[in-house]
Length: 90
Image (cartoon, rainbow, N blue to C red; front, side, top):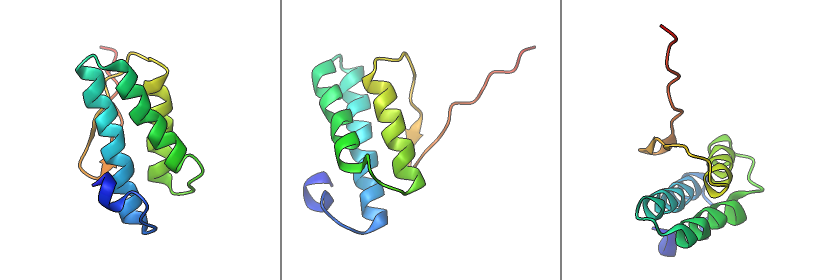
């Protein structure tokens, strides 16, 4: 995906590439390959950090958070990022 469409100008392809790179970072992090995970998140930030599209801004923000080592469990699937549900106080 990234090799083939990484420089595509079409918005939908840019979204898919950003999502693929973000998910690569998540997977590498789960495998305890931190340096490679950080590199994948860096790639998201470098490629899409100046983007104006909301979904790309969201993925860049999440990549920066994950790169920073925050203890979050990302819930990205499909073609758009999803937010974690807040637990109710009962």
